[in-house]
Image (cartoon, rainbow, N blue to C red):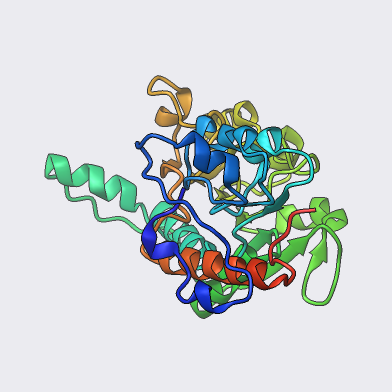
Length: 298
């Protein structure tokens, strides 16, 4: 389900045009179009019912996600269908938000916004991002975009990935590195190896007063373990994603001290649409001429 602006220009000029059907998010889905569909773009951050449409597409060859994460599509993906994610589409937006969440939390901008509504002027000295040691866990596109934006802020950036390589430390060094850093940023995909990765042991390894920033997936962090540390006042956190999500209005996270929450908006900025259009256009053109698709999920 995509809008007309996402359609590639000049597909008729290629040897084998790819038919594309266009629906609105709230419109009726034509059963005949579903029966003929070969390329599907689910609604960005859409409901499970949208992904379930794949089960009614017997000719489907490709599902092109508009998110970097794809775990929510796996249970609906028919056998033999190629799944592609949107790696690269959200790098700029998510990296910007990560920096915003760090600075807002360290400099108390959320507190200042609340003070405004009461006409309260609180002048105080708060931590700067400058001179901090920042650990970015997840050295893919988002992680590298975060690193590039962090470097002008006079910080030391440590990149960490699943395996060690040039410029990237391996996860085997995590326990040794955690106590030395001031800010930990999570930008890993959700997988069996990362689900619940930030547990009580992980958090206990962080230094007193350190800041945890999650722009990955909510399930990467064990919520109860984080709540315990926040309630003690030992750690701070900024979360763009939570577990559960959406976060219920009566959840304890809303009132946890030292916590700033944004409602999973890391990738959803004005930078998203032009990059999404370019990706879908490229994929359709590749498919039309029989070229290998990019961002294929193994």
